[in-house]
Structure formats: structure tokens, C-alpha cells
Length: 120
Image (tube, rainbow, N blue to C red; front, side):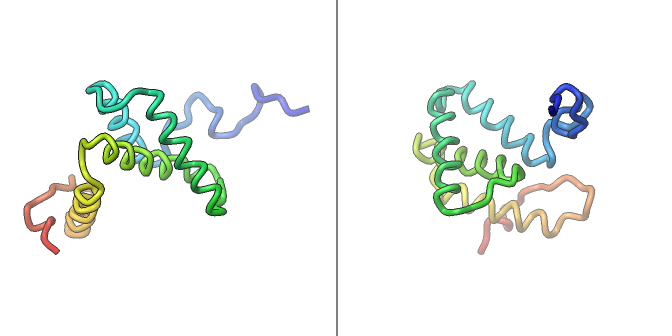
């Protein structure tokens, strides 16, 4: 019989990181802050995340465990747009600008958005 208390999986270790990548922690924190500011309720958040996961499964995407925060981010973007806090176009434009800024930023340096990052 498999004893979860004895499982040495990194997901169950006390010293295991909560997030595999920094962007996952940022997405988590952003969801918490937006909730605290009243942009959405936890019920709305849970429904949005469940809808993203269900849509991915309906498309036949595998649930490998590493896609959870991709669903988290997609749910966050959809909910923010649905609530009118930002449009999907604004979110996409900002994501592209972030990509441009990241490309020009040396590894290990903080990424800074500049006006030219928003240019096509």
C-alpha cells in the first residue's frame, strides 16, 4: 500500500518550492491582489479556473501537472477582461511588450518596460 506520508515526491516535501517558475508565483499573487481589490470573488475565480481546465481537457490537452498555472493565467486573463478591468487586447499588447523587453534584457537583470516595447 502506498503511504502518502512516506512519499518522497517533491510535491509533498516540506522543503519543496511552492512554484516551479517565478511567473507562477507572480500570477498567483496577482490573482490574490485583484480579489483583494474587489475585481472578482473567489467563487468567480474558482469558476473561471474550472472553465479553463475543462476547456483544455475538452480540446484533448494532456493534464501533465505542469499546465496548472497556464490554466491559472488564462483564467485570470479571461476574468479580468470579463470584469472590464482590462481588455484582452490590452493584455495581449502588454504580454508582447513584456516579450520585447525580455529579449533586450541581459540574463539576471530586472526587466523594465519602456514605451518602445509597445511599438509593433
